[in-house]
Image (cartoon, rainbow, N blue to C red; front, side, top):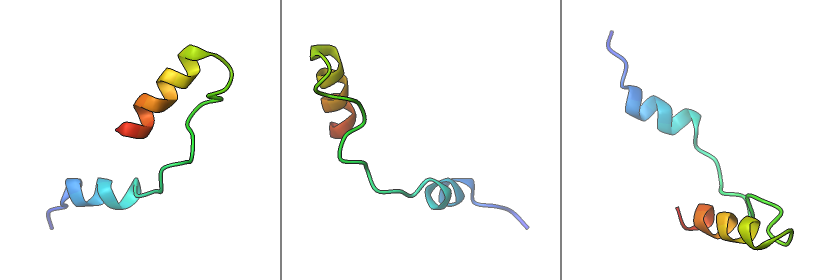
Amino acid sequence: MSMNWIDEAKRVFRAKKPEHFTEYGHCEECAEHDETLLKS
């Protein structure tokens, strides 16, 4: 039996995006990184 690895990866890694990825209020770099991750 052949496994569909694309579908399996989507199933395993299915998760809601967090509201924020970093401590965005810490500094400009954290805020920029957080914004980049939220857009992806």
